[in-house]
Image 1 (cartoon, rainbow, N blue to C red):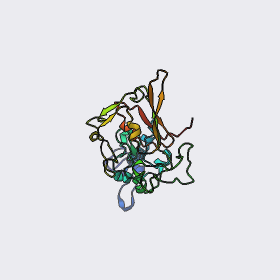
Image 2 (image 1 turned 180 degrees about the vertical axis):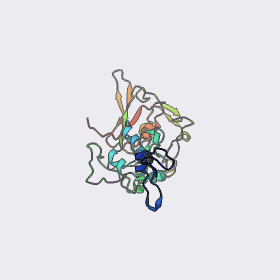
Image 3 (image 1 turned 135 degrees about the vertical axis):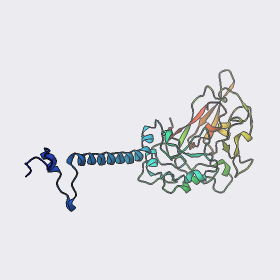
Image 4 (image 1 turned 30 degrees about the vertical axis):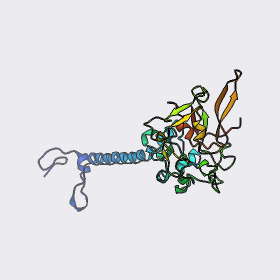
Length: 301
């Protein structure tokens, strides 16, 4: 007869192990408790990694937006930044209809959110070559809109005083754009470098032979924008920011006479500025003297 605590070979057995090796249904032995604990631990670690991965991917589109230092210049009709980011589905429809390819979709590493549409005015501004603000018509969510819903706030200085008149349509029966709010505001940021302020003219290609930006020159072709480099200028006093602005009464060249009797000129931004960015794009200096501040409001003072 076997003694208690010994198996048939006479070797001492661990009472705890004997307790854990209870028979499972069907006659199979259940794994010892330490093995089950290790398996549970591995399952928990795998689940934690999966949940962390899913959450990490979900946050990829948010982190760049949260860490961005400033907002981008958005397409015409864009809602306020927080409303725009929450409603835009990054479908790219606005990009496809822009005749001058002014609208781009952001990359993840840019710090502004993956796939969010924006305009880099210095590279290619919106000149309203579409006549009807096609990006707004193409937007399926109302992120770009002609008329903001009454439930969304409108900051003072953002609404335009009156409907903007498009110079290219000035002779049409209906020359205005269906646009009620500005997307930014132009500003003479570097008056000391401005050619007009210095009383200088400009001749040649506005941005050089390598510049790929396009504009609609109505005197050449009402419907087909052409490359800026194919349209050289010859001005006694540089006024490109004024002459190429697509909106009537948005900017003018203010002339004054100094104490020395000499005439001085300075670009003056007016209330009808919608923030399209053409003035910034066409400025022939290496660093533009005039820039567009995105989401900036008009202040009479």
